[in-house]
Amino acid sequence: MAVVDTETLIDAWRRLLAGSGKPWVLFEHGTCVVLEEPGGGLADRATEILRAYGPVSVGGPAGDFRVLELKNGEGWLVTGHHPDVVTFVALEESEDPSHLAVGMLGRSRRDRDGRDLHVVHVEDGRPRT
Image (tube, rainbow, N blue to C red; front, side):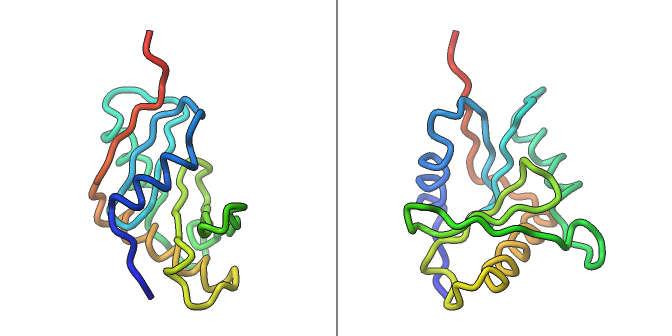
């Protein structure tokens, strides 16, 4: 299983969120928090959301996930129980392309990001006035 570096993750999220006009914050293991209602510092707000919705507790809603295959063949997006918290899994990262395997990988990364809370990039996609 390959590990995608931070610059590759930033590039992927820039492509995925291009034109959205929304600020986003990327965490160390590939989880991105898209801020629908940014208030205060972007990194602080995203960290609050991920602290609450990142860690996995089996048997509860935090254990659930959904896998979305990207049309460009670049990989998958793994969502959880908060609509603004999404983890990117690159195609080369999963030897098993089944939604279960990819979902488990994405969920485990969201869990790590929700516990480590290490911001690696902040991008403010809002239009400048």
